[in-house]
Length: 259
Ligand code: ADP
Image 1 (cartoon, rainbow, N blue to C red):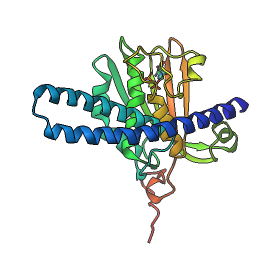
Image 2: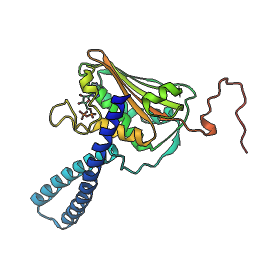
Image 3: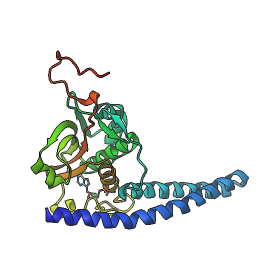
Image 4: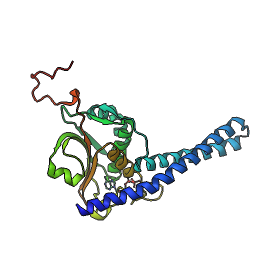
C-alpha cells in the first residue's frame, strides 16, 4: 500500500508538471496552425505549398501529442455520458480489428447485462485503441487478443488496494499472448514518455493517456504481466446507479418501474 501511495504521488507530480507544459504548448500550436492556414490561402508556388503542408502535418502531430499529455494530466475536458460498455466496444470493433491486422485473433468476451458506465465515448475508444495497439505490438508473430467486460463488486478490503470506494464497478480488460513485461517495466508503464519501442515507433504516451482517462473517470487501472506469456490490462470504471444498468438476474423477472 505504501508503494502504491508513493506511485500515485509521483504520478500526480509528473501530471502537474507535464500538464502545465502541455497547456502552454497547445496555445503555441494553435497560433502556428492558424498562421499556417492563413499562409496556405495566399500561397501559389507549389514549393511553398508543399513546405506549408509539411509544417501543418508536424503541427498536427504536435497537437496530438499535447492532447495525450493533457489527458494524462487530467486537464482534458471530458464529456461523460451514460453508455453500455459492450455497445461502445461493438460499435468500435471494425477499427479495433483493422488495428490488429491479419496475424492476431481478436475475440470479444462481453458479459451479458453489464452495468452502464459514465464515460466520454471518444476518450474511451481512444484508450481502448491504445491498449489494443500495445497488445498488437507485443505480438509481432501473431497471437490472440481478448477484450473482456464484466461486473465487479469491490469489497472494503479490495477497495483499499485500488484507492477506490467500495461499490459497483465495470471491468474492461485487454489481454494478449505477447512478450509480457518485467516487473521493472510494469512499474513504469504509465509514466509519460516511457517506452521500450524504437524511436519513431513509440511515444510513451499511450498508457499515460489511458491512465489519465481512467483516473479522471473515477476508475482504476491495473497491469498483470508475465514475461514470455502475455499481459492483461484492466480498467475498472464506476458503474452507473441508474435504472438501465441494474442487471436483471432472471430474464423473466419484472424490471423496476420508475415514474
Ligand atoms: P508506447 O506504446 O508508445 O511505447 P505506452 O505508454 O503505450 O507507449 O507503453 C509504454 C511501454 O509499455 C511500451 O513501450 C512497452 O514496453 C510496454 N507495454 C505496454 N503495453 C504492453 C503489452 N501489452 N505487452 C508488452 N509490453 C507492453
